[in-house]
Image (cartoon, rainbow, N blue to C red; front, top):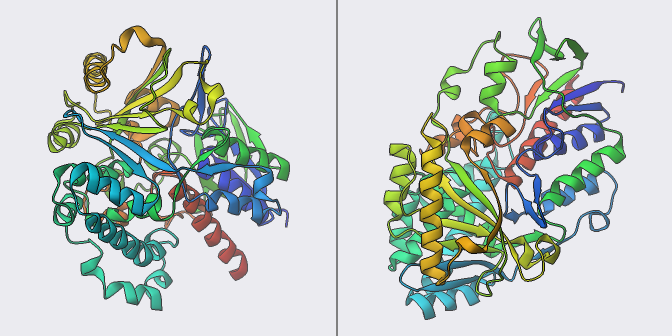
Length: 493
């Protein structure tokens, strides 16, 4: 085969697509507007502190390992990670602290001891989560929703009979209120809606499959940091002969007679037998495909939440903090109402702090910590971000001071800020939304763009803004689903 594939964007899905297409026999060229690969899954260095810039949770590592095995490599020789013994440390304003052990039984006992919630409630909740995963993942994660064969098979039929038990008709919060009697446990399990930028008071209870990934399947940490996921796949692609063009912003996808035939970068055209778009779907249509038919209904869908991140180098070590830490808001529903209904940041936001130096000591100087400090925010709708950021920073520091009984400001040695505007400019994410279209209704899975174009032949899509969704595992799966479509087309042709 002497066919050529062009990939627009080197986010995690674009990198995976490049590896998979190379394995199908294509010559692959990747065009990236930034000077580095990875998109959101990148890193920054501030003084003596290193930070993973974007996604901080690692689940389903087998989808990374699969790329190496597919390419004839031994994954352990190129990418190493550990399983976390503790998933998260939780903190509340009233002094309650909870350690979420990775072992479900230890976690259930911790919940019983600290919150008085019967351990059996936790066990049943995680069993339900596993049940939902078994019946929903084959449909919504591993296959295209836009192919009839996905819906007409034995597994699909079995799932249809269980729709009432799979949470499609209720909300995440409603389901969690039925499962737990302690409001803190409801809040803890409601937070999984944020894993795809949703509101637990609106999003369907089907998202309660997410705890299964952490508690029953495990959460992990790459030994060299999250950015090593990007670097390991990038190195694999290079080793296989994939060509990368950095600082090359694609201006247009070239379409002739209904076929994608290449791209234009500045004044130069590059021809290809197929084009893969890893850029945010909305911006791809608005800018790269502006002269083509627009899927207006999908483009106009409400977008997911975004984030405000403070990268703080802290010149002190806090023993009570772990890799993942959550400082909960006193009024979770009001926080999400501000994000999704009012387009503002609540004065008492839930604060997430990721500290990779707990496991990777060279990410911070001795005696210090690298705090990736994040709150969920509305996406960019033209708000007064300078004021919102200043207010949020003050409120975050005051909240941490109250809960940890500290004075944080003098401990902040270095600082950088990432907000929805810079997320949008650095990653081409429409409105700075982290996960593309919102998942705040029961039909959300069907309101994501397919992994191919129904209007333009040889044009394919992967990444967090298309099916099956955002986050590292789903982005990797989008590349797999897309490449399987291309392989099937090869067989037919």
